[in-house]
Amino acid sequence: MKTFEEVNLLGTKFHKIEHRCPQWVSNIGLEWLSILLTEPQRLWKRYIIGNPLFFYRFLREQFLKQLR
Image (cartoon, rainbow, N blue to C red; front, side, top):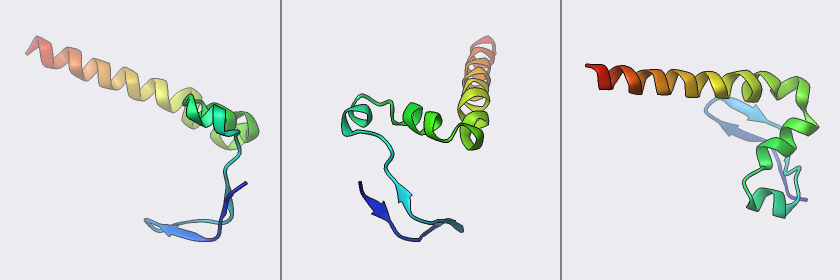
């Protein structure tokens, strides 16, 4: 397991971020699901509410552009 010591990125500090999923899960693009299952209370709003809301707003904007 790889561990990154303190990283300061855009003013946000992360301490000891660990890769939490097996390599094969990461290779098929489901690392987000693995992380959600390991930290549901911290990330459920981002993945369950935030992502669909983003796609809804994006598709709505694309649709409105076509009507103009």
